Amino acid sequence: MHFVPSRLCEAAEGEPISEREVRKPKGRPKGAKSISQILKEMGRRQVRITTNRRARHISKLELVFLQLTNKATSGDLKATRELLSAFRTFAEPEVVVEDVTVIDGRDSSVMSNILKRLRKADIASGTEVSQAVTVKEVG
Image (cartoon, rainbow, N blue to C red; front, side, top):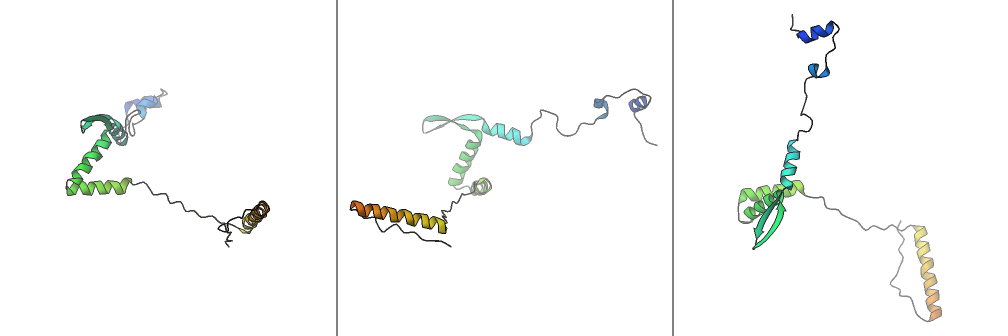
């Protein structure tokens, strides 16, 4: 035999139960902040620092990395390890843009016709088009 709450017994008799009484809370309550959200807010807060007799405002997260960098440059091996780990973790991927221009047969013929027209126009005017412009067909 198992335990049956008295409130459920009353509901069986025809009395409705509010959802709040039956429902068990799951997870975080509405409006509660997650740890990552709290860390983001704390890291974004501004602090005033003075360097070389000049005051400026930076975020707390920037200050953490500034102090870590200073310790690493002074020879602290643990700080160096942490800094290199952070660089690897948060490195932005390098964007490599390849300048690949594929010229098909139609493009090649259009460019050749343009060069022919320029040469004819330059011959008629008495000047000459440089031969440095060449069209190479790919494919």
